[in-house]
Structures are given as C-alpha cells and as structure tokens.
Image (cartoon, rainbow, N blue to C red; front, side):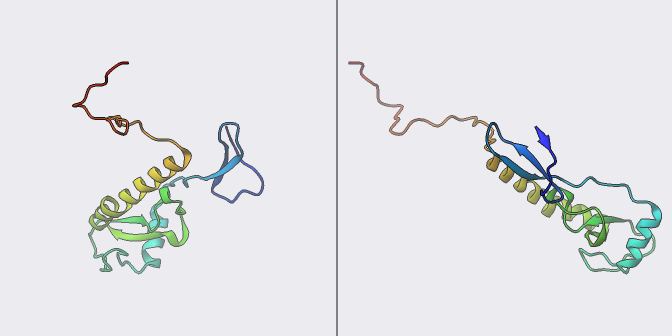
Length: 137
C-alpha cells in the first residue's frame, strides 16, 4: 500500500510494512526531456566547461547534460544539479562511479527492508563435518 501523507518531506512516500507502523521511504525523481534551448542555457551558464575533466568543450565535440547527483540517489532534475560534460567523460563517470553507488544504495535499501536474495549455497549447521557419521540411538 502506498499513500502520500501530510507532514512527510517532499520526495518521500509513506508505506506500511506488514501490520507495523508507517515508514517514509525516498522516491526517485522522474527524468524529463530537455529542449534545445534548455540545453543551450545550461551550456552557457556553466561556461561550456566539462564538470568532470574541467576542460573546455570545443565546437563539434559531443557533450551531454549530466546530473551531478544521480536521480537514483535522490538528486533533482533541474537547477544546480544539471552540469555539462563531454560524452566520453560522462559515460566513464556513470560506469565507474554512479552505477556502483546506485547499486550499493539499492542493496542497503533492500537490507533495511529485510529483503534478501536466498543463498545458492545453504550454510551447514555449526559442527557439521561431512566425514563423520551420526549414529542413531
């Protein structure tokens, strides 16, 4: 059951966990499509400098609008969170830094909620030795 309650911070949803108390959980901001004029405004506001390598983006170079704090980590889709980056810098940054941080946040969230994937290798009880036989009495 998902419901929005008064007094809950923006970007959070209140969920009931079983029959227990209500808990507030963060919700990812939705991504919006930027128009050419919005991209141009962001480019000019940032001075045409890649925020990852701090080099000037030259004419003809491919560039992206990058989120400084990823949406999956509750970053906002606008304002100071939008930065300019070379396309190659952006891809490397996403693969090496953002993706692992997002995966870790998801693992932590699942652990907090008590959701765990069952082990493919069940643990043996303490004192278990495959070389000894139990004698029935």
